[in-house]
Image 1: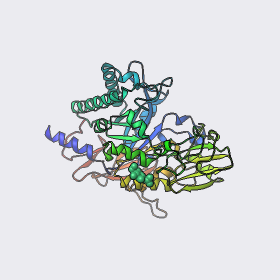
Image 2: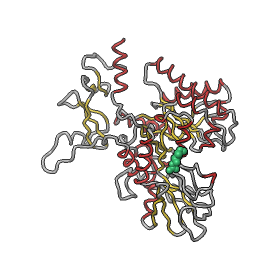
Image 3: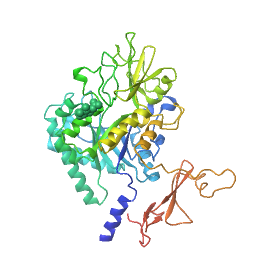
Length: 460
Ligand SMILES: *[C@@H]1O[C@H](CO)[C@@H](O)[C@H](O)[C@H]1NC(C)=O
């Protein structure tokens, strides 16, 4: 039994690589966008992010985790099958949203027995669908109809959840479920929503939603996700930036390595109402909705790519982010350069990594921006210093390479390497990836995993 435990402990660590996290959100409503903007888990590059968060599931009147879309279960399965291609990938289910404008967390956290029912339901739901963890998407405790005591109730929820995850992992001898939360960026909101020093220890990571700082609800143009304050900020807006937001979290005692900086793959738009078209120019609501996202006030990066073909793009020096304007339309967005500045800031402050909202708003097919697929997130990954993704052996032009051809015509999945037991092939969309087991281990097709050579049968 001791040996078994050692093997299991090692297996858990087999594929863990960089300590830094690159957590990417996807949304189950992006499937309804027209044409080449329609997004499902099949569009995810399994090697792009360290974690994928599936948004969104909700909580019903009986405090149970439940699906939202008709095909969620099918998409869960499609998302979680990416782990057969990249076994290091972790997936989390995000629970939250609102029901008739009210967060379903409010009723659930109010009573110990409702929290217990939710926690029990969450564990079985996550295990049944093969997720690795839970992400809490409550915007925010103590806000939008949530009473002030929800600040303390949120602490109870995360501490009870994390204890239940520890107990469950011990009982079933599996890797512990991960627990994360989407949390507020504005210092004034943070103060009312969280007991920061009490919640962070129970969470594996916190996604600070460092975007939506400015938008078409304001009377003048402002940037969605600026790194620093600007000279045109009013007194009340001086903290509407990444530097102020994360500094506040750190000053309240949040462990830097638990905080993930939010990277938006979208911009926020305005319709100009005067002749000025810079930062702080008069505006009157949002620009026309994008043809694919069809949401007023917001454009996906791939829609912005189209726009910048004709628009004038400017760089806001003091905020280290770009905006673009054409006619009456104005958009503050992020590009490769602003992502690089933010990564520098993130690294200098020793944060735990990045989270991206969302996979489906980057140019995920590479069909809009005359660049590779996922131009923003690939750039982010590279700026963060991740090792290059596994690549195919280049296709030979004259002589045939038997390894490169291994996966031609084979279904996606893992395969034995007949020439070498300590390595194995992974086929993904016809491409061949050669992986090596940890020293001492060999590949077993029976479990599609690396394990000790001496064992008689795979561990179930
Ligand atoms: C960033 O935030 C820190 C802490 O609040 C502050 O001292 C510093 O001046 C800010 N930097 C800029 C460029 O605004």
